[in-house]
Image (cartoon, rainbow, N blue to C red; front, side, top):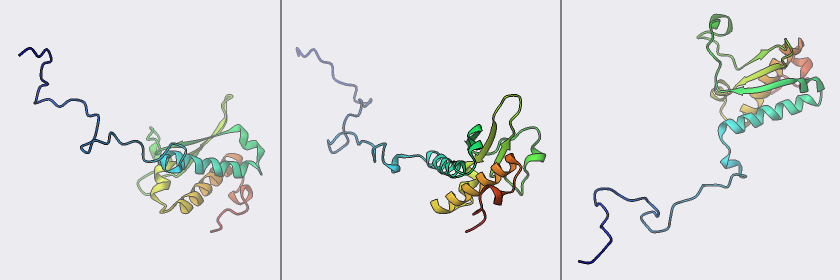
Length: 151
């Protein structure tokens, strides 16, 4: 035999370039600009941003506050002061000091667990943002958003 090509090792498969029907590898389910391609974290962050924009029209000083989304509350040394087995916070605040901006934090997973659909989740996110902004500004939630608590 004068064949210079050595046969591929039968026990080791080569790189897969096509599926078993010869059509090639599948692409993404939806293009990136379609909402289906957005992750749950991105959709949740959009809900928080929508709520903040709604409040900024009434309270321009919110431009000086950072709004963050974290997955879950952190466990620090002072856990007993923050939360326990019965109550898991949905949000929190960090007041401004030493030249640092104030922060409002919304915890994604505890909010998602307590809601069933997008509308219910959006309503709860807005309530959490209103409550945290009220705490940071030293006001009542009804003052921050007159529609607070309405279903």
